[in-house]
Length: 510
Image (cartoon, rainbow, N blue to C red; front, top):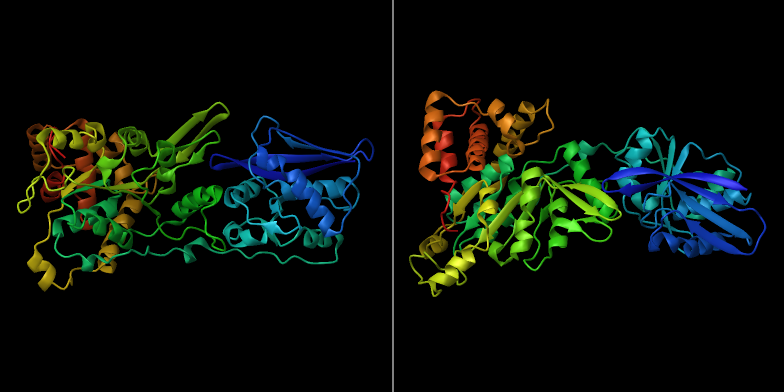
């Protein structure tokens, strides 16, 4: 007898239809064959399914069993096909008599028939909704994640036996109620409050601008000046995720297995801080079976690269394309996948190996050639893609002793940042943009108009500082964000002047 069970697989961030065909002819030598371009985890499902069916109390067919995962040209990855294979075998062998054509099944089985937490549930649920499936059966541990998707009946299943009894009509499975996404979103929690940062007013102002417009920022300064502290305080002033952004981020964390158990979605902006020994694949993504890297895990959040010159140059250069395009495309022999990578880059760097080049109090011990080589580890094209360049000087001892750190709190700054981001979302409501930093050249011309005085100032500064065309447009984007923080519809000369302060001239040292 032949049974066909609907399931789903994930390719990149998108889910696709996978039909599980199970043939149990009731004759032939005992054998369990699984075909359909399956990886090792899928192939091993034969043993998991066999043990789960037996430990459930059902009969495992003794003849030849053939399972085909169609379409055959799409790679099948992961253990999510355990449940549809088990249901297919039980239907094909006549132990369950149920029409399941309107249902979709997802889930990994343990040997005793318990359903385990399974990655990639969120994109699969959206596929089921778009494909007009009426019912979706998912592991009980994924119920919170599945609950954010409306328009489809979600049945969280604890065990295979529970599902068998449900089909036989002897037991009910309670429907999962939908959870509204907007009720889950929160402001991020930071290691430090901005009020705890002594001095560094210009740096705090620059971090506020970076948070408001999602602008990349480079903090340069001597060891102990507070660069890392400022970066660690940034999550506390970031604007809250929108519903669309939260679902984008959650899809990435769902397919990689990084979504915390029993949590519906990622509720605040990610903050990723990879070590400088991270490989290019670890940062960008890839592998024989491509997976997202740190830049994608930081999507709609922060990627913090501390000690930027210590990263291998090949790793840093791989950032140039995703910083420009907001997407990472990975091509392999098995296919091509694309992962979103719209992140706010926060980087920190010392001016030289010893860290004290240019410090007025402590003498640098590095040779001039060593300083030059150290600074050239960060290429000009990469620096040109960073919107804000800030010097973070060492804090005077007297300030550390006498000041209490009672400056503006992160909560107060976050409210101003949130209002600035609200203005941007309203401005870009007819586009796919979420922040000023995402504007392309044409959009900058449409949304960043200047008066005659502003044009003259920017033209003079571009010639004086020898700015590139990219730098010119980045100054305009930053000016637009500063105007938003001031609540101004127009970009004024003061906004342009402040934006230019954060832009080094071409050829300046790190």
